[in-house]
Length: 340
Image (spheres, rainbow, N blue to C red):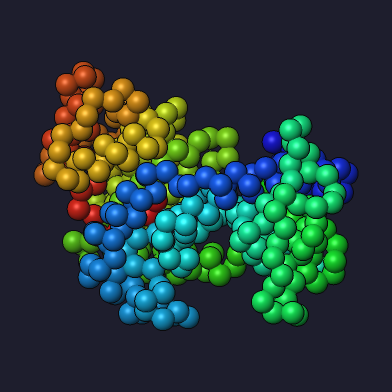
């Protein structure tokens, strides 16, 4: 929190570029974990070509059909661009805090942003400083003589327009100069509007919101998922919240009519368990991923008539909820839309 603030670029650029240079290098050098590819597998197999995907893509404004999102959308506060690295379309990813691959003027002198060169790496010392001078891996000469990246021969990138300091286009703490990706925001808003409209017109349409690892310290994603849920018909939408500490919904009163599945666990183990269920296999014994016992304000598994059952208060009941034997858990198996 103390280092992730924009004022360091003026007060001590070695500290600023040391922190963001380390993040930049680490994200580039780290392959997305298995969970990203499993989610992409679900998207490709279940959501890329269903009838609701075709409805959205056929009516999409501003993009050819093959570039428009379908019945899947990812909203993330991660700044590593890993969803795109595994093959998700840019139009189906909303990075609400930006990411380290796109840079902007620190002032900013313009709202223009640009991508860092693919071959670039910062020179970060053992004490996490990035001194002025040469980077660890210099950017190669551009194919276009007139094109600049601001990374040429320097460890402190520069704005391609005014020549002043450049910074990653990431929302930091106490940040009033961040340049957001307006096209991403427009894509998400258009997708959300389309999904809500289709769900309102088609009672057979089901939507699942799968939220993974979003905590309370920066609760933006939690608020966005609960807001989306509240805009959908109550019997057609499900929120699955995966979190090792806070899996329950925050706004219990407004969402008490919705299906919510709290899972006490961490991301990758739970994704693997869901993959087993989707393949018709029983979940493996894994203490790091299990349904949390619902609170009194959380809807529990319901019968076809809508009458509530008692909350699972034994290990056996919790195991049935997780394995899909309850009506509530079955809802995550064959939804028409999904947002992660």
